[in-house]
Length: 232
Image 1 (cartoon, one colour):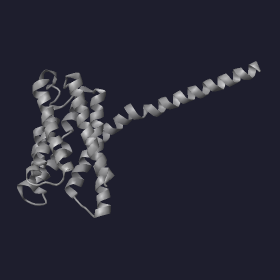
Image 2: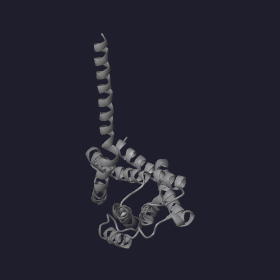
Image 3: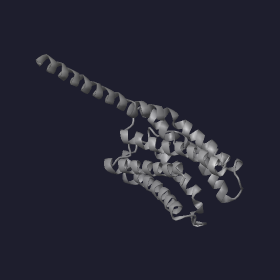
Image 4: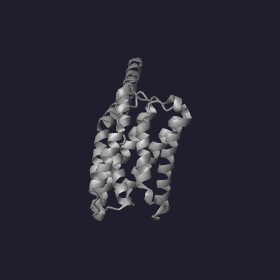
């Protein structure tokens, strides 16, 4: 079993669940980029066209259906059900250029020039930059809800874990896929600043708080021992 791929897929599932829970519980799409969600929908719809052409496994089919259905559902929530809460003024990244660049790369760099293979290549390149409108929106607003940052972290962790998956497959199976490798490195690099900010905001303070708590507890015990000695 490839634990890296399984964990990465689970992180991807979790990231989407986090986003759906955030939208449904708050009944708001504030802080979420519709353009990024639209790009992800295009990614899944073009990558998984083989869903109707061949059967790989129950796991594979369920994952593909989940990603397509959830991405389209998120678009529905943002554009129809909670449309009034979506701040279009802050979601201004020119995403059309991303689609154009991915289309060119998908045609130029493809393992086989069949419609399915070209669409797959296009989806890989597009996914590598699909998060850019969301990151740009965060930069514009200067803040984000905690749940939104957890969504981004889970999404970035999914891609970072796939890097380990590729290393594992290369070492164990001799598998190579330079298109996915390059696109994955680009995508992970885009998350690098966010990972650092996430670490400093949510991870780094925890050990500090734990240290302060333990230090306070130890100091209290020392004082209690000193008082006891004086009474004796």
